[in-house]
Image (cartoon, rainbow, N blue to C red; front, side, top):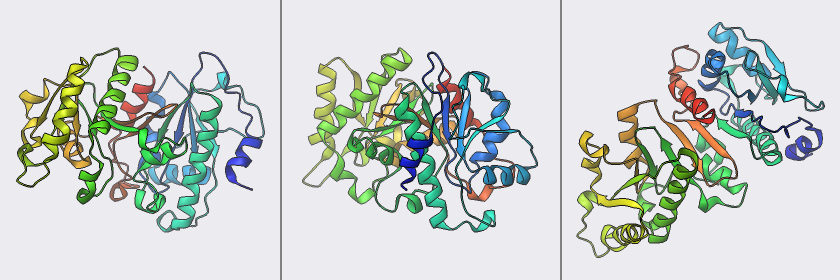
Length: 338
């Protein structure tokens, strides 16, 4: 039986409680620092109960690895559960099985099936109750997505047939950034840049800031080419980016640019903006991670629910060493608890 159909038939969690909004947490990559960070910092979160979707076996093995014990509250799919009784003193867990003998030797096939089943379980819950929110841990995209999607942002968008209508926002309360193109190879970036795309991108972020943060944001926009110049026949900065900015300015959006990316992130410049729109991933993610390190979160806009993820990868080098930085996970949950 299809795993999602199985979940739909068996899942009887009582999620229709008014003014009660648990946060759904998909652990993601089985070999990742995410569960370590989650286990160590769970007691810090007092407001919304967290429901972890992960493997019980994996969770226990990770607790042994970092020498921390936590009680696990298994949420049985067969039973109706009153979520009012949930808190974060225990790990509230929906168990998703994964087959492995050794943490260092989990087969890619088993890992991918586990991640897929975890997301499908979460999506069933999210479709049943629009008030729920989602956090997911990092995933090795090349392995899991198998060239079908550019990233998890697009993967989730595809589940709602809005793959081209989702936006990645790397949020920090002082400055956020958003790449117009996400995990597109650099040689193909220019193919995805259009006036319409820039306009829709800015509108979606503006709407989020107004509705969720009660703020009218100021935008800065980078150019595509070095110094916003090109000696070639087509200059995207002049032909595409500038007209999009002019259009938005006339519609009373607080926006300016295009600016050369090599100087836009200087201290005096970033004070002028709430959000900087870049043309490609590393153009804006490299500077914001340099400035704020782990003090930023990844928000997906355009989905029917609010999805946030810590702005770090699986960090295999630090796996099991009990020294990973929890800041981005903490900021993610704090943001959803506002």
